[in-house]
Amino acid sequence: MRPGREIYNHIKNGGKIDGVERRYLLGIFNGDFSSLTYHLILAFGLSSNGEVTNIERMRKIIQHMKSHRDDDLLAAALIVACNYWANPESILAELRSILSDCEFEDFEDAIIVSLRAFARSTFRCRSVEMLEYLKKLAVERLPHSNPLETELYVEAVLLAATGKPTVEKSEILLNLDQKKLSDLSFSMP
Image 1 (cartoon, rainbow, N blue to C red):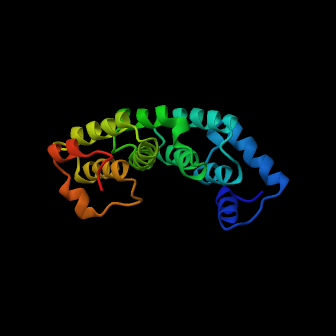
Image 2: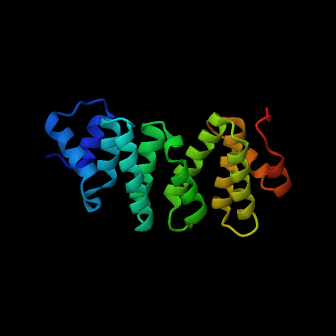
Image 3: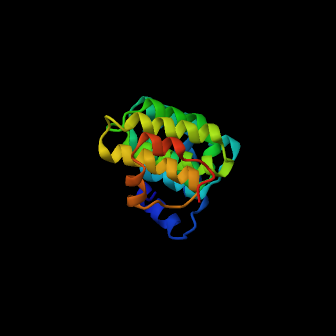
């Protein structure tokens, strides 16, 4: 059996996997959490879809990796659900939990994935409540967080309000202010 990284790279580059490797990935995905690796989670995500049973299992993986403080595997599970399966709405409760409960120093990768996914979902749903939640989180970080963390949260608010795929650093820096953040809304140009 090829290592997880090789399987992932093969699928990512457009290759097909045979039935043996598909069953292997399914067994790992549905098996013991200790067998999961970063590349095996990503390979499973690329070789399957976001059907209900896969989403439910991914929720359990997310909860397990969060409770065991495994940022890399947590980030991989979030990438699959939010990016590969394009379904962050299916794990909004988990995204909120990561954003409100996890420390940036311990979960930097997972928080970055969560912020971007939550921002995209906020814009797609045009949820004022979700936008206000992001703004609250960003404002909480203004006075006492490290600059990178603060900028990432402000960036998420801007992504959520505008729906842009990216935000310029200069725009982020212009909005590192509680009043400016509070004024952001979906009506922005």
